[in-house]
Length: 179
Image (cartoon, rainbow, N blue to C red):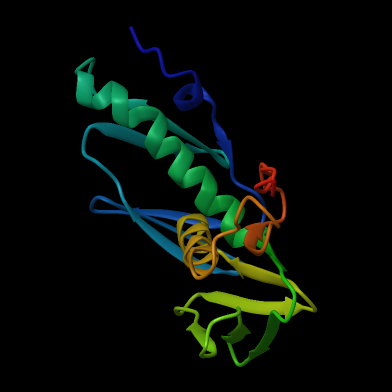
């Protein structure tokens, strides 16, 4: 009995996207680019009439556990090559500056030195005043780059200074009270 509810959902292939299965790899090509993902031999992938379905080869624990994962990965690839992914980070702090040029961030984060961050290939980083926008077609890579940028200066709980995700809530603490 397969319990993967996510794995059962079929993936509709939008127009302009081609999916090819080539000896253990799934290649998704779309208007924004091309992504390749290794597929475990424990699952079957079938494409019929513009709909992709993932099914476990057998009822083994490995096949069942990989079922939903593979479906999610392929779905994320399809969304990536059509819409792309984007993460926004906000920079808060007095004297903090953000500047970007040809995919490199130049940050002043209250250290004694400027911080430079070069984005890897396939990911673009831009800034709109104090908001850093990380975008690309690979969901995992976009999230990784956003996490690396946030790690340059994590938000602190007293004044909320630092780099935080746009949708992140910083739990604030009361400072010490002087007697």
